[in-house]
Image (cartoon, rainbow, N blue to C red; front, side):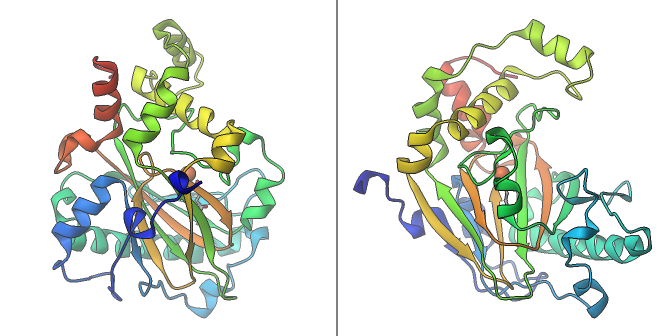
Length: 299
Ligand code: SIN
Ligand code: FE
């Protein structure tokens, strides 16, 4: 269906940078594209690994109870490493990736310099196909979705993510990307379940959520689930396949840009949160889009 084709240039903006301490010449252009919900793609921005770090590229290094190895640089908290003797090498790798991501963000997104917060990153060692075959539909990230965390409400904070494919065998990270957020929201909003403040209070009391789910968090989770459980939307909804080769990096607001991970193995991912008010154009934030469609505050 021609309606459902997405043009590459409408979903992805490409940059030629080869360095994490890039010059900021493209900054206004990058900011505009990112806030529109596009993916910023850096085909030549690689993250080099030492021989010791290449030896970490083995799925058995991940604690079998977890999906990924995770690091919170400001708390120096590392979780999910199965082999104790490798902890210092993993910590060093993830700290180094965090520092490079900070340099890149400072250069090409200087407006957010003071406001990006709560950094956390992951080392993703499993092939995507390993978990798509075994998890429930809700956790299956090979279905188009926008990111929303069941246990960690964001209260409208943006989720900014930087990714780097570090596959040593030439394998792409293959994604599908989807339609613009306002179109997505209009499509699914009529079918999303009602918000119950009492239920949110209970989930928080029971320790299922870290803070109380706002109406916004409820809607984003409903949207995430409605997208993933809709077979027709997954198959025929607006989408475009995009390959990220080894040695490339990309950035998006993953709460806004529909995405699905189809193939690949070995990736670094850096998350930052950002208050919507820190955006150049806060009206593009999912919370503002949903509030204007529903004509009421959601936080
Ligand atoms: C996701 O954020 O949905 C998964 C991205 C990936 O693992 O490539
Ligand atoms: Fe996701």
